[in-house]
Image 1 (cartoon, rainbow, N blue to C red):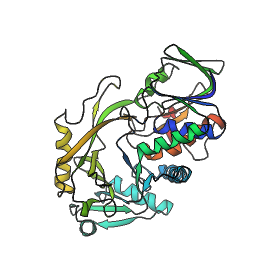
Image 2: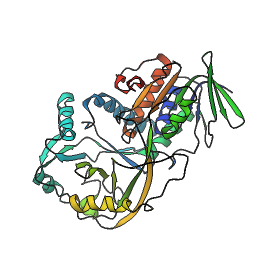
Image 3: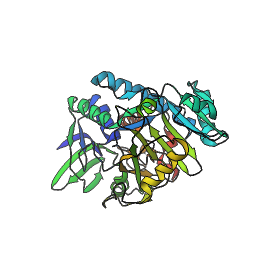
Image 4: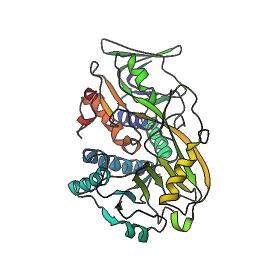
Length: 374
């Protein structure tokens, strides 16, 4: 079978790219080893935070603002509610880079941001207790995305545009000759003019077939839901949050529709082989204990564990994304290494991949995500 573009990896980013490419009239095939949305990568777990005054650096801000516009477009196109405006509270030491980057991002791009002293944080959200040298940065316009529902929404639109999605289809061989892409899946062979690789923790292995070595480290991550007082922690009155503490960086989301308070740790994690079975939540002694010690110190009213899950982060050495064309093959676009903070951007990344395939460039500057930095 012949296609204009083949996409390997139909998760959050690949599915978005499939939508944008098919919308622009490209005959598009999406291949995935599993059946998205699934629990084998980084996009499951029901919800993700989206924030704009970005602690990781102000250069991300135009990209995330564009992503929010595209999420709004997706809601309008499908009639589904995918975004909840809960606000996001970021907490840390006033002098930390984490907090100062948020404040500088908000100033540069005129983003709404309330900078709040520690006692005022507790007055506004009684479920939070902070040390005196911490402050809060509250973004009232940000909130929560329904990650799995968003992938389904992009899939629905991509298929309406004529895209073909083949699940449980593991790619075994990739080759390019005279700018013609050949993909083998078991006994089947597919051909295309262009290729997108957006396969999460498997991207490194796939790209090695095209003589490209990218530094990706897959790690096991955990997150969990805890019973919570709905009068305090429900999504109508309690924000999503990110805390930088001496023990690590933790994030959480309010109780949505009574599901409980969701909490995870952003940093740390054990390196894994994505092709091997990953330990489930609770199989490692620290899984629950690490989250409980954070809650006991900063959100002490939380009750017992309801359940937990695991996922994978694919880390780059600098925790920044890779979004670029292959250095040798200009008809191959790559998105990888999202280091645990990529989902919120996936609408914008999918659009960028479409632009790279069609014109070789993107309207929003993505040079900071170049492969060449490695």
